[in-house]
Amino acid sequence: MELKNNYEFKIYENQRDSDKPNYRFHKTRYTAALRFGVVPEVNNGIVTIQFEGEHTNDVIAHEGKEALRGTMYINGNPLRDVILIIRTNYSGQSSLITFWPISQHPDAKDSYTDPLVDTAMGGSPYDINRVATVMHTKFKENAGVSPALLMKIAYENENKELQILAHQRAHLLTESLEKNKELEVSLDLERQEKAKAIYDSQLKDQVIESKNKVIEDQLTELLRLQQQSLMVPTRGEVVTKSNLARIDRVEEAIKGKNNQKAIILHMSDGTQRANNWDRGYEARLKLAKTLSEEKRLVRTDVWNMPGTSYRWQNWFKNIYVVD
Image (cartoon, rainbow, N blue to C red; front, side, top):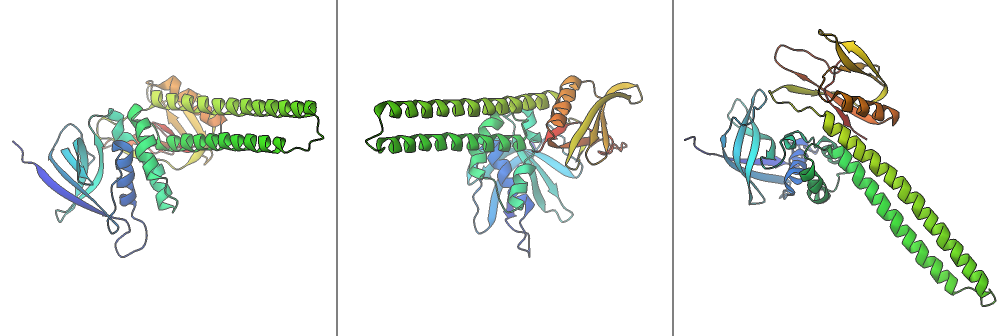
């Protein structure tokens, strides 16, 4: 029987000998919040995480890394059946790379927290408690969902709530003003003006509701198409992300050694990126056309196995919505 390994990782908020923020610190906290609904506590600028487990072949880690399965302790509380990925340097010191719960959907390991980390690195961190509650709930329902899309939905819902609150306050103010109208204003005129105010308010609510329904339906459709077309690495492929750009135009062509039908993305940076995979083709094509029409900012990725050299400037596997 393989002996269990015990680890203690200390992740510093700032880089050593510098005031610059530490990417790994924010990556660890947002990952725990999104995937487990737990916010790691910070003591004197340090997050401490313990792990107890064994090496596992259930997950194939990338070259130079190791996969373990066991119990993770965050804030002293045990989280069982966790996959942990670590890297050990030449001196034997191990560093934490990432982690996810076995109990959740297999796509959980591929949920990128980069959009969340970018907010913290930029000095305006997204509310991590909201990630551990609202986003974590959405994540459990759909482990492959993009955090960038969840952030966008959250911001739009907040905007909708502010609109409703503003309407309620305006309605209360209108009622207060109407009660203090001069006595010489006839009752009939009062009723007419009040009826008009109610009508305008209802009409405005209908317009707002209609617009929000359109936005919500568009986001739901994008999420559905992205999930249908999503491809997940299963053989230890090296995944390389592209730059950020917009899809100017989408066309279909014949490309590949077997003359496969292919989707060609004409990007705003001048690159042309192709995908000739049959699985998820129609959903991927519709997703690309929708994002092109809406002028959305996207990122693609490309996969490579040893001996291959596909470049993201020429090929793509997945399309991720960024804004």
